[in-house]
Image (tube, rainbow, N blue to C red):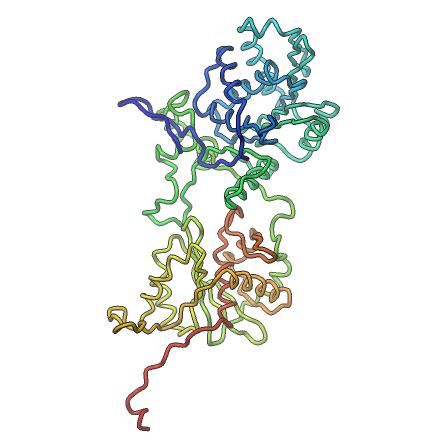
Length: 514
């Protein structure tokens, strides 16, 4: 992501483009008009603020908005208010938007926003002369132009906003935004041609962040699929912090005490924030408070009914059997997260009429997998090891085969493949689809037993489907949980009936003549 050049000895700057971004395609943008108008009113925007406006105000070939919804998720004190003011100035004085509704969770926030933009307009004679009236009555703060256009400021409630038809809705403090407020405000735009809604706020704070969580899930799903959401532009500045399971040398996540984590989450660093001020915050705030308020690490609630969406919790728990054990021959499977932060090894084996599945190992990183697979093979002599070649675990196949050789130090003669302690079965896409369907059917028929292990239950609670033609497989991204235990268990079960080339057993010399 782009970062502004820094002069030698100059202040450190934050990332000017967000670590997380998705937006529908556009052929032009009204963002530059908003940037220029803001400058005319005395509001000089940072590079990152300009980036948000150019992306959020992207246009289709017919001139309509590319994105109906624009969401900006950035920690406090970075200057999101400047983006709001530039967008509202454009809507009033260039865009011809008849009504702009600016709402905030608290009345004082809405009133402060009114006072800020009022000062900008009054300070620019060319804009001020177009204003008919500044309404300053408490609860009715508005700016009305001579042509009837209006910018109105309100505090959100279940009923506020009803009866208005806004061309543009500005939803400030969107980390406190639920269904009641959306039900009151969003329908006001139904009769408007080419409306737009902007959400701006900081990281999610739990159950109150219902709408922000919904927007974020859509954005992550679009990024995972590699296809932009057709109506959402989402930009988030946040750090991706280490978790407790990360190894000491983990480079896939951010150290919360590092300057780079601050740069990544705070685009205003070097403009209105400094590393010294941030260090003071880190010393004063709680660990979780610092992560949320300065590093953008939020808590996002699941959609109601979102958990256990594929297989019901009651159904899964009914299949638990703490005394179950797999019978020989067993099959193992390996899976790895897309970012390679975690890996899982699962086992499957018959247990009466059902199939026993179990998480054998679920750890951070991948460097432990081959060694652990060798240990399990020497103990269990499994039917096979299963890996999806198209998954992140596919990169382990070569090392796994080498690690499972009868004598890893001995090279094969000629074209002969080295003998393995257990075959490695490489799944193709059609196998992945079949495995998911068979697993689902087996659960529905009660032909699965398990030990009620937390990693597998957590994976199932957050699991989603990924469409593959007329069938489906487990979705790897945009689910918010590590689903490698579920994928590995699914593939291990499939491995019990997969075609494998059984390794030839060495024959003792006396057996030839016995």
